[in-house]
Image (tube, rainbow, N blue to C red):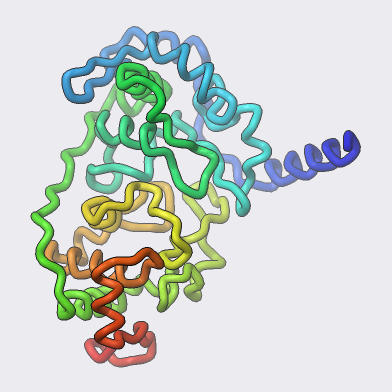
Length: 294
């Protein structure tokens, strides 16, 4: 048993050395201590104010094993989470986050970080921390923020506006399939949403690590939430740090809702969209069909 563990440690260490090293100057404990006294080391969610110093204790207890004492994603558990089997813990020093209500390239809101801590991330080692009190989670938001200088120099982006959800119809589901074809979602997610598109095997994140597209058909939920509004938000803000871009400049709000309805029809969970698509005998997109003739 000890020999197997030693071999596993050597293997994971070799994998870590083989991965690209980010050109980000690692922060020191003294720098982080200085930022603890800055206005950026606080958070506000609803009527609750968080303080980074108060977030230090729950971070040490629940988070440091993966994210590390410096928040750089190099905790003692990190070597066992190498891609492609696992996703590396988030490097908070970079100040780059997938799940945001704000436009691509901007910082998330405190509410966004609170929601991420509360919700956790499906298909990763990050569990939901909704067992912690709201105050503890808001304090953790402040602690996470103190790891990156971005919060000392930038404000969060303005959350995108999500228009009211229209009534789902068969025509809207078919229109969503056309959007899925036009913006070439199938290249990564596959024509049936099974994460097996022609580009899927080549995808890497911004640090050069392998990353897989979301599989709509395997019963898991999107990492950034599984409500219709969450799905709308995902492709209108993009997932920063990943190959998933924002389509805010390519898809109109009505088209975005059509795409939400079509993606629901691809998912394995029972839904009215899935039932409608079945009655319509809706076929997968054909990448070789002329534009507008899917």
